[in-house]
Length: 584
Image (cartoon, rainbow, N blue to C red; front, side):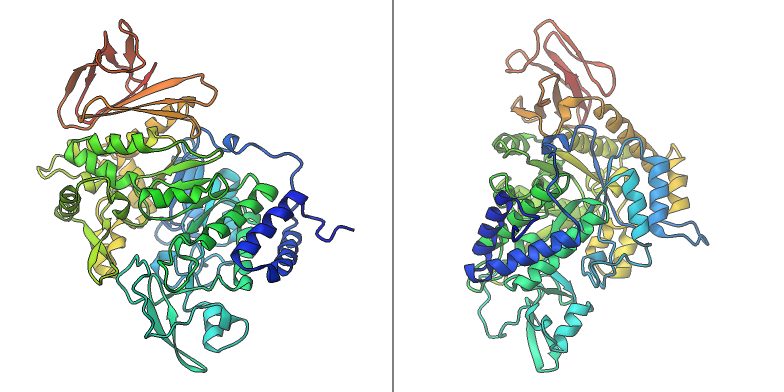
């Protein structure tokens, strides 16, 4: 009888290589046995037919990013918050949203869910697994595997402080006199945190905060705890798994402790498991770093299926604020063809701030500084990280993406135009679009929330009261009504055009610093759409005769979005901050 009956020969060969690389040959057999045990636990076998990954996603897919309690129950209503959000989405968004990313919905002690106390429990303040199951029947669901750290209030860490085996090997102890200057820091907080244990004071590794204790992936048993959690989430209806802060998971003193080879191999291991047993599942890595480092998580098509397009939010913001498409066009042209079965996760805002590290090297330093300062003038904040030499530099801009376009002259109309321009460009690019809840509702800076929590990120994490939000959505005089309904109309139109398929071709054209221009074409080559965006606050009339664009000299091209003619006899006309979708 075969020793591992659930393994195919191909799978066994692949994971042997993974475990040998991550650890050593001596533990490979133990790792194989544990892998097989978990496959049996979740009753996983290789499917008889595997769907091509490019067929898992289409132009009709969008991912809404939201907290489980983003829409709060009506006053006095005793109902699970997840259930309330489900009801709201079904009432207002089901016809134009296919996928929901519910940010960490587990018991947590800080960071709005990202300091997990118990990975396998739903926070009782939100609901239960039955609410997640109900949502999964109406939407494809994405969830977070917070891999780098756990809460100091977790059972794992409590047993560590009690010095119980095996938890004593779950965390990373470091002598406080150790030189750690080479370690890449995403925060300015101390990297080591003193804790009291049954054996006295010890210093543990804390990349993000003293409440988020880094775990020790050099211990194979710890890795299998996370593989177990990973498979558990899939069994509970999550078909997209976001690997949070995955870049930092492997530690080795004397190195940067970011993007280490073992980290990439762990992602490859998870991809191998997915490809062989749950091929309908999508892996997405969250690595808020410069572009070249970020896309390294595609590997050779054997790591993440999707990576966050982290350079896009700050670069797009910069282009529209400065009314200059030069750097955005240059960056878009530099994007290389993606490995098979890989695509981008495009977004402009998320629960975090607008990361500016991915902007490094893409715009001049003085323009980078000017962008940071302009966000402060618009009511935002700037979070900083500590550099190797002890200095501080901007890490992210804390501001809602809608208010990032607020006009110094108080023009709401121009603010809305600029904002919609940014969203249309994002929705046009190759990849699957991710839309933060507050992008749909044109939410303003939550300054009051920041004053209550003392955390800059709260500015973009407002929680809506059900009645408050519904009232705004029914009032044509509000930003929320206008943006929500415009967004809905755009997405419904986008759904009709296969040229926006996430695996379709993208061609970038440089037709001047005032315009951003790309062409999209679906994989089956049935449709081509020319996307032209005016990044300025002035109306543009421009001859396209000198441009190498796929348009006929005497043809007329109408905008899908408005039905109006935008190109006639090779002359383009666009209003201020207007984006046109032209079938060519």
